[in-house]
Image 1: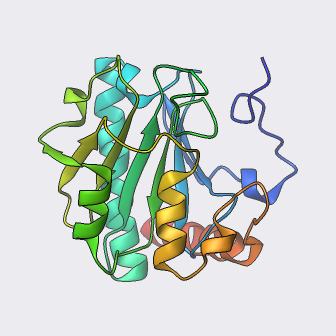
Image 2 (image 1 turned 180 degrees about the horizontal axis):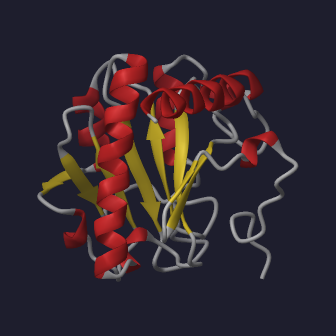
Length: 200
């Protein structure tokens, strides 16, 4: 099996492990559309976070809250959080471009979030554990920590990245395979490392 998250090449700056827990590690993001863009990556090779065990889900929720607070302290606002969950690893249905459970945390506020909610058919949920594990989905947590999920969306790769890029007027640069944004990756690493050192 060839998976970039199962076989991280530590000699690449974008694979710098910023943080690690029992079940997850946190990385900067290749294709960092903004400074302050990281991934929570499950250490187990599963298709989506909806497949997490109870212990893993508790840890996952803790990490999300921790990094919402870290981003608030570093960037002055809470980030958005999203996952393209693909429990049905079928190329015709998936919205994720890498089939290994990972969640995006992004230093961004949509100019018109309601348009995004309507376009994606997002519905509010109370808990991430309520997401169905037998359907492809997009999970979204907004800046105010309101949680949403949709099972009814355009099944195209990097959909959420496309929407963020459009909001940033970077429409032609959404594809992480073509645009790394190395300056943003380096700034993110430095800011988070500096923050963690100060907190010790």
